[in-house]
Amino acid sequence: MSPLTLPDLAVLGALHTAGESLSAGAIAAAVAKPASSSPGMHLTISAVSRITARLRARDLISATGGGIGQRWYLTERGRVLWAAKGSRFTL
Image (cartoon, rainbow, N blue to C red; front, side, top):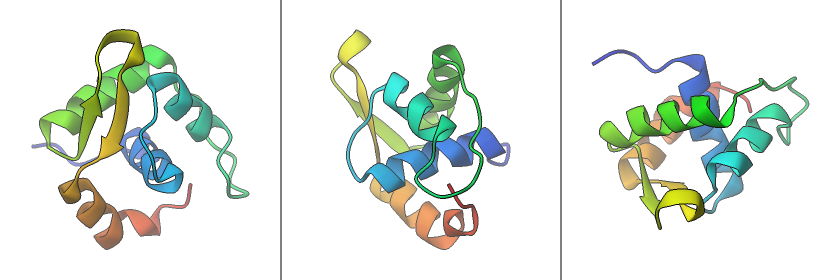
């Protein structure tokens, strides 16, 4: 399994910071304009979709709903990973 990339961590960080489930568009917006003073990064909706598919395959995130209404949230495993390693990454 490949290591997590910076965009992967950005998506995990956005979900952690939000504390609730987010749509792909809301994830992209949170990554582009983070709550912290960091500059953020630009992710397209299709990039977020690819990243969420990878993170879901690793059981780090899960989704409610489907299609356009699909919303993503951290799984227990995702929360544990973020607490152990992700907190070093500031979003």
